[in-house]
Amino acid sequence: MSNDELIEYQKLKVTLNQIAEQIDEQRLPIRAYHIIRIAIKQLKLKPGQTLLEREIAEVLEMSRTPVREALVRLQTEGLLTLVPRKGFIINPIKKQDLKEIYEITESLDGLAVELATSKITQENINHLKHLVSLQQESLDRNDLYNWSILDDQFHADLISFAQNTRLSSVINIHSDQLYRARLYTINNRPIPYQSIVEHRAIIACMEAKDKNAARFAMQSHRNRAWEEIAETLEE
Image 1 (cartoon, rainbow, N blue to C red):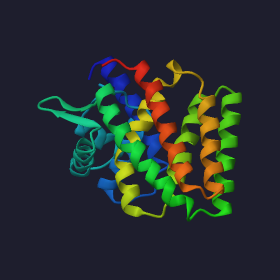
Image 2 (cartoon, one colour; image 1 turned 90 degrees about the vertical axis):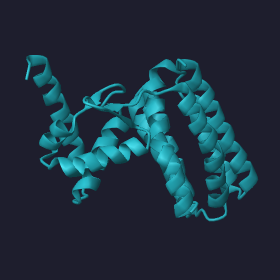
Image 3 (tube, one colour; image 1 turned 180 degrees about the vertical axis):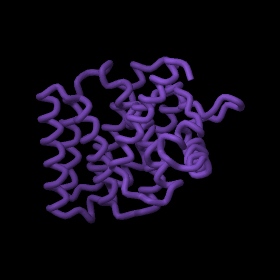
Image 4 (spheres, helix red, strand yellow; image 1 turned 90 degrees about the horizontal axis):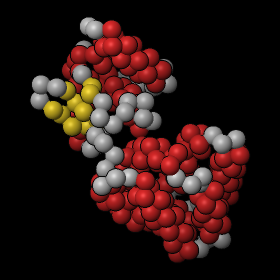
């Protein structure tokens, strides 16, 4: 192993082990899947980077079989591509792919919010308001990374309030790609003050039990976010 390869290996080891400490799952294929997925989602593993089964298995202290299962699963989810005799490549963030994902997500998130509006409790509303307050504090500190984490949590929690596991599962298939794109482009987009305004509008519609307005507010929010991201990405 060359000096450069050793440095990259050590970086991989640190990255994956830091994430592994946060994962409670003990079943090896699922554990490996979550560790690698989170690293890709958070851009700890970069678009275009090559992942080798052998190296990841060594770092995670697993056999290659559960690691391969995890990599194949991530391939089916569109995050990786297997290149023969080279390994798994982390897929780039492509404008056309994201356009299709945002078209799907805009409708499904709108439906989730519509369903959640009739089920949401005041405690849930207060929770969402608290998340938005934390987002505002992050922007005041110019901490865009923490803002993005809270933004992801806001959308995930809101969708969970719809209490529809099948809908949540479909939305979650694409959520990592959206998060990765937001994080990848965040320094090239306007500071997301408008997102705070829109989150508060969505909450206000839900608190008023106006499900149609809540759906429209969410879909408009997703559409504007896509337009911002699209401007920063090449074809």
